Length: 134
Image (tube, rainbow, N blue to C red):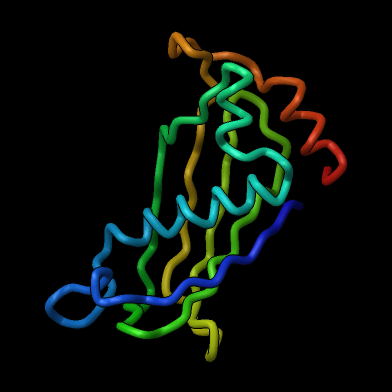
C-alpha cells in the first residue's frame, strides 16, 4: 500500500454561513493531498504531463461524517491500495488532526489518457514508481 499524510488548516474561505466546511471544499482537499501523494512518489503533475500523460478524475465519491470547522487542522490520509490496471483509484480519509475524529472518507478514480484525450494503458514510468509498493 502507498500512503501519504497531509495536514491543512481551515480558513474562513472554506466555511459556509454555519461555520462548517462547505461540502465541495473536501474535493479540493482531496486534490491537494493527491498532488502531495504523487510528489512523494516522484510523480509530480508537470513531469507526468511532460511525458504526454494526463490523469483526469472520472469518478469522485465523498461520505460526510462530521463537519469540520474554522481554524481546525485536518489530517488527510491519502492511499493507493492496489496496482492500477485501466484506472487509478485513490482513497482519502480526512480527520481532525487533534482528536482523530473522522470528518470525511472518499475516493477518486482516474483514467490514463494521452494528449489527444485517448485512453491509454498505465505508462511504464508510472508502473515502475508504484511497483516497489505492491
